[in-house]
Amino acid sequence: MSETDLATYERMVNTNMRGVFLCNREAVRLMKPKQSGHVVTLVSMAGQRTNPGAPIYCASKFGARGLSSGLADQVLKLGIKVTEVNPGPVDSNYWGDRAVAREKFLKVDDVARTIAFVLNQPDYMVIREINFDNMKFLAA
Image 1: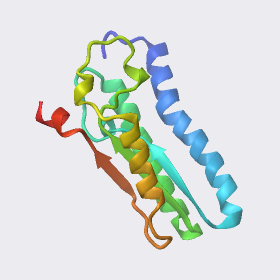
Image 2: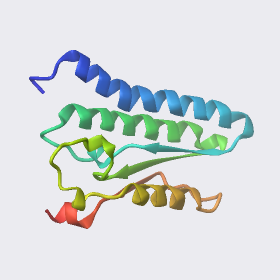
Image 3: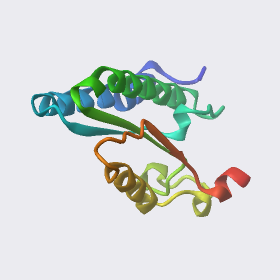
Image 4: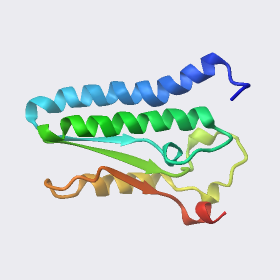
């Protein structure tokens, strides 16, 4: 963290917190008149456990969790559900050319199936958050 410039910090926070705020705010504005809807906030397990190699990223994800949880408390009485989805590392373009053990990561389809599961629950049921990881990653 001591080597990170302010522009990098602001880009990370703007992407992971401001982005969640703006998207969720607009989604709720559309759902309020109907008194129904479901906001799914894709966060990360990095918002649940810290990583010494990415403290700013983790902090921004912890913040995104706070935004999602606070929103859930605000809009539940309006009939709007909010679910925070927290996958572990996902084999995606995010990693670029970095040397990472992608075979231990979740697949994008795993995340999509999990979101579909959340959205296909009965109307009376809300899953506030769901956390998941690849067993190979956790066992490493």
